[in-house]
Amino acid sequence: VVAGGFRPEGRWRWLHRVVVGLFTVVAVGLAAVPIAAPLYFGAPVTAASVAASILGTAALVAGLLLVRAPSVAGVVRLAVAVALFYAATFQGAFPRLDVFWPSRELARIVDRLDGCEDKPVAITGYAEPSSVFYLGTETGLGDPEDAADLLAANPRCAIAVTAEPDRAAFLAAASAIGVAVVTVETVHGFNYTRGKPVSLTVFIAEGSALRAR
Image (tube, rainbow, N blue to C red):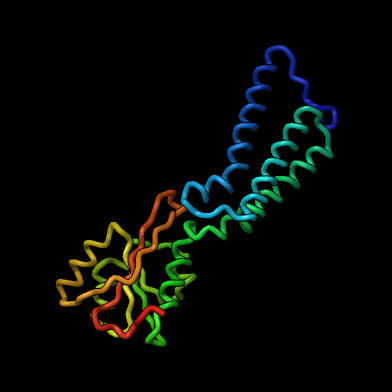
């Protein structure tokens, strides 16, 4: 059937044109993503992004050629092009965009804090598994009061991280138990699993032994 091709005639011709049109629009959009994403988020366009978009364009061309002259070889070419585009995008281009990996950037900030060998971390408002992966399995994921309590229990070495919606509640909880806090840095990223921006602020207790190197 593939080798013989699908030749729409009569009333099916419009459906064929719609399918081809939708494929073209979707394929062009996907091919543009590796370059459009860093531009949208103000990040540099890397060689990996350009390579991924070129492979996406190759997949588009392979798909259109398959529609024009269906064949088994055409199906194989399309499958290979799509696989290479997927690999180049998700293994090459996107991992280089820090904005998509706020947990990774958060781990870098924590790692740059010197002064304590053990640095317990509590996070409130951001319960992504990636944060535990990058910061360690002992990372606490709780509410604003939990993060404030950690700083109170270990003001010398503990670290509290709050997402923007929990920031005011955390500061209020810390103030209520007499813990003065110092802002270290804020990470601005994009939580792609939820499809929305995220801001994570790193706090330490006033008088902490931790210092950014």
